[in-house]
Length: 311
Ligand code: SER
Image 1: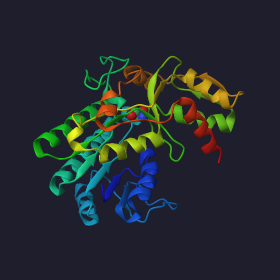
Image 2: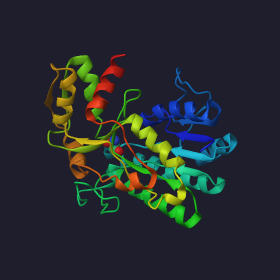
Image 3: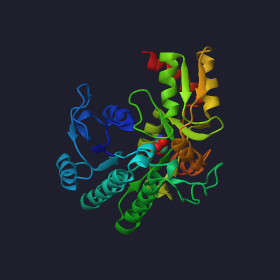
Image 4: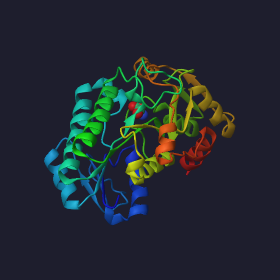
């Protein structure tokens, strides 16, 4: 990667990723795009408003910037997608199709995140293999499987350098996630500090894969810088830093805040989504093919989240 355009740049991943790209690749080599107007405190010099379903503007911005890589993060998350599957399809699939066509026309590398949401109730839930049954039951999951297959197709058919990971729930303190199922694991830290208490919309005993944002950002950069001849799987690699349920997360917070309490008010929609997803992923393909090596476990993440959010 030398010259990078990032879509969805003001989202949960984009906010952290763009900061890091500017440090590693230089401010002049990173163009951040988002549907929102430029945030007042945006650090980078290059920022454009972009709706990724507007293929003409997307193409022109990418070409004019001279990008060699698209990091395509613009997407609707799982819970919002169940409220508005039509919007989800338009942004997640038509937006990705525009990225793929631009990558094909301009011969660019393309990163697209898939998700644990690309799995469904028929998938083996524990140590979920890299290649396995994918019959998701959410609009989000259907869009992610379609995306994985489209990326594979563009790689095989047109030789486009498409790469991707299946992200688990991502936990971070710079920007909030925008309406997913794993969001409880972010909100809990805010409420712990503000109220000393959290009411979880996900039930105890519900295990899901999670990862701390610094490991997620590393995984994007490491995968994009990996030697392509080593990549047997492309779209998309299982990645995860940890797997826990709300009770384990509560106990981790109590190690640093002994008075923290939690109760439950389960949201049936998001609980059903969580129940359809794996408990824990097998990440061995990512480790073997490009050296995926997350650094944060649950307690290390909790310590850092509480310290950073306090500031
Ligand atoms: N964090 C996402 C969601 O909950 C999963 O990829 O929708």
